[in-house]
Image 1 (spheres, rainbow, N blue to C red):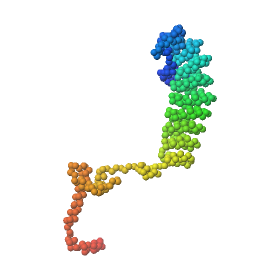
Image 2 (cartoon, helix red, strand yellow; image 1 turned 30 degrees about the vertical axis):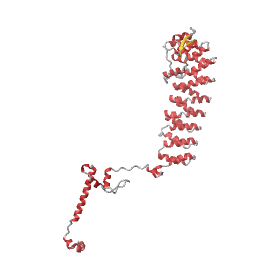
Image 3 (cartoon, rainbow, N blue to C red; image 1 turned 90 degrees about the horizontal axis):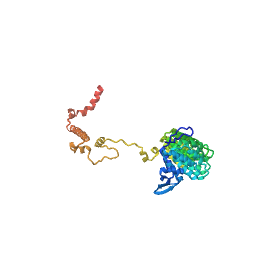
Image 4 (spheres, one colour; image 1 turned 60 degrees about the horizontal axis):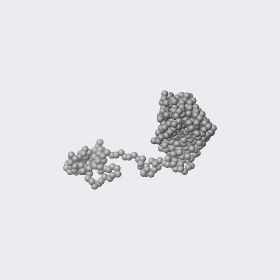
Length: 461
């Protein structure tokens, strides 16, 4: 059984384990061209690829084909397991064949065969990239693009050279290979970006910066350094591309994103500063450093930056602090649109609003219990805005007309209170009606001498 390929770090030689084996195999299968060679019988593939037989029959898409050695070489990628060892040998000899068509066919089968056994295959791939036949060179370049996501260490040196190739189709395929590699082995791509950001040609640095977003989503902290270096690049376009990754970084590590955004806020390029603001918008509103960055941005000379920062103030500050801050900014702000926004922030509806607006902030009155309402109404009092009806009977009269078994507990209490009041009233009337007179009142002594006697007694004592 052939050994499985183990991806290793090109610098340390240690195994790297990011990505799924099934996913990478699927990627190669999806990019492999299909044809009648898939209908060959497996026992015919090796003899046909070696040239031991001139042709073999194939049934594919309900049609019959008679295939030659070129198709047999392409079909080598179908052989798995024990048969893959023989397929590997035949493929190596096919890569050295004098016929360019057979070399092209061998390069088309190379990515799939390499999954089973990769020894020496990438050495020949490197050689055939410079083949004098243009078709062979193009096939080798395409094979590199397909193989890169699966074999990062196998194509490391090849990819370094091809990324900087003066031949356009070779450079384009190499960059496609690097993009595919970012999906499966992002830390390996970070190594390439690290070197590319040091290139004197800004086009290489711009292309490398465009890969930062991919490695930032899938990679580790090594990608943060790349973003930091790109933000310091002398080329405005490189810094703009790097700054656009800051919102993504804010979701992964807010602390690092805050540091980078603080630096980007003072960049000479306005687009870089705007990207920094977008990153700050994703940060926690309680982040003290983020608040300081926004507050300093409210006094920026760039109108776009000032606008973005002032619009963030309601999110970051409490109402009282917001009004004080907005009032201070009004003293120096010159833009009419921002002045209007700041005045709205200073305006306190609870204090300066209309009567209807103020009433919205008033607390609702505590509801009066029903029992207290009934007692008060029985005494002629009223609650709230509802007038007490004058034409209805009093509560005591309504209760007295009801039978005792229909009264509620509250009504029984009211009935007892009303009965006690009636009893007291009748006793007072009876006392006035049957009052007796004393002898002094009958003879009129109190009328003649009452005042004098009282005054004399006072003098005696």
